[in-house]
Length: 263
Image (cartoon, rainbow, N blue to C red; front, side):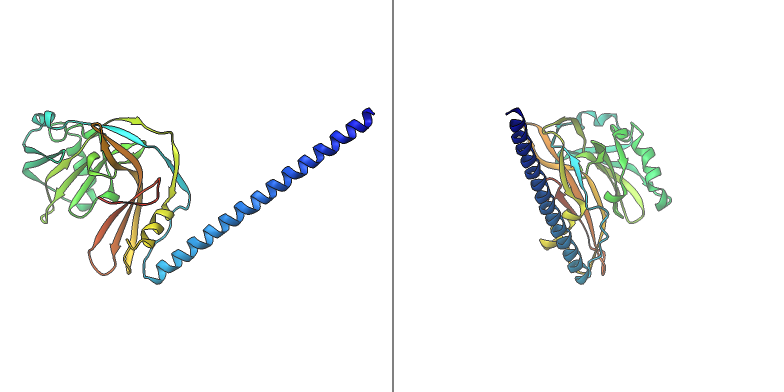
C-alpha cells in the first residue's frame, strides 16, 4: 500500500514537471519569435530610411533606465545683484545677462575651456559649478552648459546656461535657468531604446528625406509644471541635419512613452 502511494506521488510529480518544462519551452519559443519579429521590423524600417536618403547609424538597441522627477523652482532674480560688469533682466523664468564688454573667443576648439572659466566665476555666473559644457546641445551661435540630473544632462532651457555667440565670434551674454532640489516621483523604470526613439520620429514624418541623424543624447527635460515644481522625464534628444543646407533640428522624444515632446 505504501509502495503504491509512493508510485502515484512520483507519477503526479513527473506529470507536473513535464507540464512546467513544456510551458517554459512554449513561452521561450513565443518570446524568441516576438523578438525576431521586432528585429526584422526594425531592419526593414532602417532600410526604408536609407532609401529615403536618411543617414543614421544606430548606437544602441537596448533600453535605458530613468525616473519621473520633480524639481523645485530656483530663484535667480534675487541673486542677480552679485554679478559684476553685466546688465540683467528676467524673461520667462530665465535670467538674461548681457556683458558690458563682449568676450572674444580666440579659438573654436577651445570654446568649452574658455567659457568654463566664465561659468566658474561667481561674479559672472550664479551657481556656475552646477553646469558643464555639452557639445551635443551646442550650435554655432550657442554654447550650452547643462545641469546634471541623475547623472544625465538636462536637455531644456530650464536647467541650462546658453551663451550667445555673434557673427564676430564674441559672446555677448547668456540666458540661464536653474533647477532646484529633486524629488523622485516614481521608482526607476525602463525606457525605450535610442533606435526606437529615432524610428518613431521617422515613422511620424519628423525626419525629412535627404537628411542626417547626428548625435542622439539621453538626458532629462521638463514634461509639465505643477504646484510650483517642474516635472522631469527621461528624454532622447535627436539632432537632425539637412544634407543640402544649414537646416538643423533638435527633436525630443519622451523616453517612457516613446512619443515626441512638442515645445
